Length: 444
Image 1: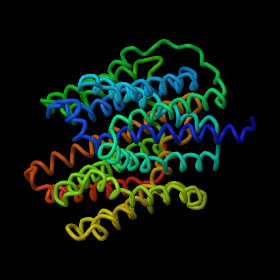
Image 2: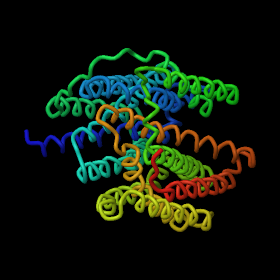
Image 3: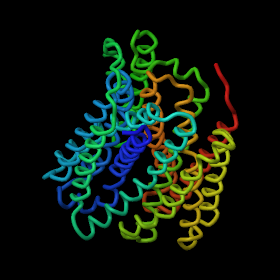
Image 4: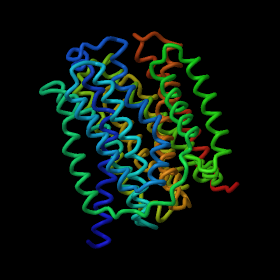
């Protein structure tokens, strides 16, 4: 097999991996009514169909990145796909809420191993401008996967069965396992090093409790404090460990650190927007789940378009200028959504979505490039894990911030007023990212 053919297959594997993780995060959102009826879910158990996936995904990302560096990437990819496939199959077969929540947790673990490993494969097989283009293609499927999940989930729940959405993951995983067996070289296994037991435990517990504190904890403030204490212990452990799962000197490069911070804040703004606009369209405008899914298409299509043109822009203008332009475009989109709030679909939702989508499509590739800037081959999995952790945890934190602030000001019935507050917060978050993008490159 030629090197070029191998690169194409690696890119397909990476894109499908990202597509699956994004799809699995959104496909249940437009199926919740049917899920509740079929599995006899309560108000307590229903949120955990989604929370279990996010909890596992956020908890295991750092260990997923470290494993892809410490062990063979091909083996970790295969393990991730098998875990994800089993979780998907069990989700489709679930007879009750407990099995569904457990299966979704398994899916989340599979995604946490899959996301950093697939990105690290791109770093292994591509270099220079080829890597920039590969990352742009990789980033392009993020919005596509999420919006396809919303549409497919709504269609299946309305006309067939929500279970089919989970079954569809099985042949896709089998296809990827076949492609991996055919195209991936067995990477040299590094010299075995002792497992950082305390680092592993504190990272999983700390990240898990952080996600839990913001998604369903009965005592969120207490849970948040415990999470922060454990994460502080994680930092101390990593400073002292001879073989840390997260080498802290990876943050010595300001470009990388800036990339992680900017990605977390920007995704927080976007995820909060996605949540509130879905609630707003269903509650205030009485859209069906299927129609809500279709309403997202302008964002996903322009996001894909932005990702397709970004390699040429980066070649000419470099990451910093492209990122500044991208977040400026997103700022305009959020501002327009706020100014035209309450008008008909296209001026208040469709056109702002198109602008936000193209900005997000332009932003993800330079942010990813920043997150892996000058990273050595033996740290590419860790850097990829941090990129994904920033994306996932940033989304959780941003959404929690908007929900809590909006809920403290307006009742749950005043969804339009809550959405307006969320737009103001999103606008402020994008402004912060613009400031970070303008700081330029600095080395510590």
